[in-house]
Length: 438
Image (cartoon, rainbow, N blue to C red; front, side, top):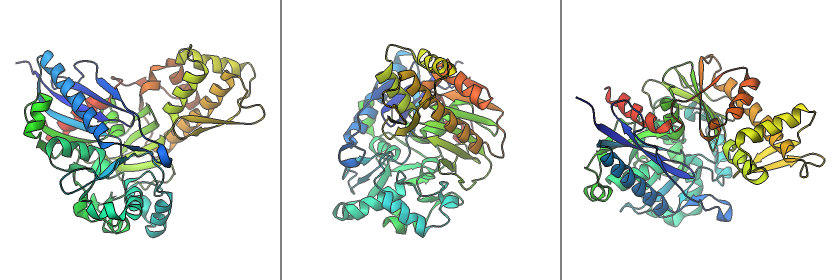
């Protein structure tokens, strides 16, 4: 008998949520995913978001996806979530947010990150980052507790975004070790919460969500939520961070396969057998959502943002391929690109004589040179000790064949487009399937 069941896969991205219906029969999307963008608040030097924005988006997309499943004659048997890492918010004992969410790109906790580095000399082995980052959950919480003592005194839970959405859907606060393992509170060597990290943040273990291997724990939708979404009380699974789910969906299920994701950030991701201590500022080690594995990840946080901004402001009439070809032709004719560095939020800074008035091809060539160098560096770091056998490309920029060819030429390798542009959504299904052992 034909399998007519499906799961709803919901990705909580940094600037947009996506949701798709994934068929159990083949693990593929039954229809193009639904997506809704949103705007973050950057006032006052921070990066925050109102909790109601997140909950409204999640409900809207899940409700629409449930309707799509019904239209396709598919029975929904579960909901799986992937999420941006590090974004968090405080809740009171009634489960109500006490403040806006602090987004992972918020870098105000610089002082706290430095203090943690002094106090935890084994941080790289403990948390998989070479050094504490102001973008991590642990320094962010330490900074907030210090800045908002009155609200901290009322805080019952400090939840990551996926845990908050799960709590909103089910009434229970739980998450997974893949996401928590990147945040500073979990010791990768034991997959247990670190007393030293809790002491540094000034919170207790009870104030964090319960954490289990990806998709190992699930609770049903609240009855009222199930009615609102047009679903039965199906279980809700926490399946890991968006990059990990994307890697699984692209085919990174064993050593030798590598995902090169060119979305908002450039991420190079591979599996490894042990939690290697991070040995570079842009390299991260963590717990894979596939049991018995760890991952090694290299990240350049501004790649997609910068390239999109440059395209839209300098040559909106060109396709990405045409834009890259124009820059390559300019450089091949003897042009020398100016200095370049990305600026947080998608900006670009150019340096050198006449840099700001340089032709657009020169500026695009400068950005290409920078991101190509970052790609080859990250690839070498992530695959150290485990030679890559097959590289998958995903993310918005992977749609540009010229982009892929440019990187292939520089890295002397082959980039294969992932089977699905939205690999994280099928990846959520694979992770649930793997956790169930079915």
